[in-house]
Amino acid sequence: MDMETLQDNFAALTDVYNTVVDLYNNEGIEPDGDIEDLLNQTKEVIEEVGELDENDFDDEADMKKINDTMVTLLEALGGIVDSMSYADDEDDNPELAYVDGVYANDGNGRDFIILFYTSDDGEYAYVHDGTEEAIAQYTVEDAELDDGTEYEVVTVGGLSIGYIDDGDDVYIVDMDDGTIYAASHLTEDEAEGFYSILNDD
Picture (cartoon, rainbow, N blue to C red):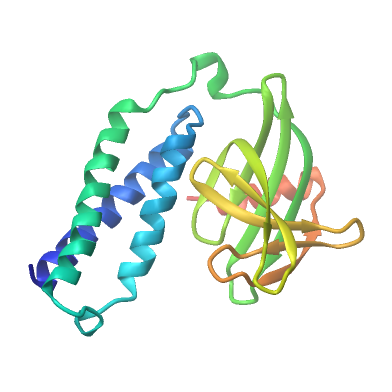
């Protein structure tokens, strides 16, 4: 086992992960907790390995352990594509009614946005975490930052973003580093405008 092999498998894992995330978030895939768990595990490994260099490994066995983890995830992600279930055509484009939306910016051109919708078959959300986006039915879980700040995690497919609404003010939490950004509520017209800008090819 050498660093070159590790780097090759890291690149392969990153490519497959991005492909599966894109399929899951944007191709009408039915929500699936097992797929989301695997994507979250893979994201954590990618973030961990991406910060390592050869000097961070104690020996070849240590390097092999991480490489074996990546290979296992690669095989699991490869099998996921065949197991994905697509939503029925009639549900691919449900009629959505706008409920609320919030927007924040990190001051360096990175936009964060959450748009909430309702439809006859459930609640939907569009999220953009500054780099990736997704729109689908969503889940909400309670979470807490290291300093004790409580917030909610809105998860759409394999994409999550933090959200705080204390009744007076609203904030967005960057899931990458826990930074809290002051946000503002969006009218429906403003939400449509932001969505159009972020999806302007």
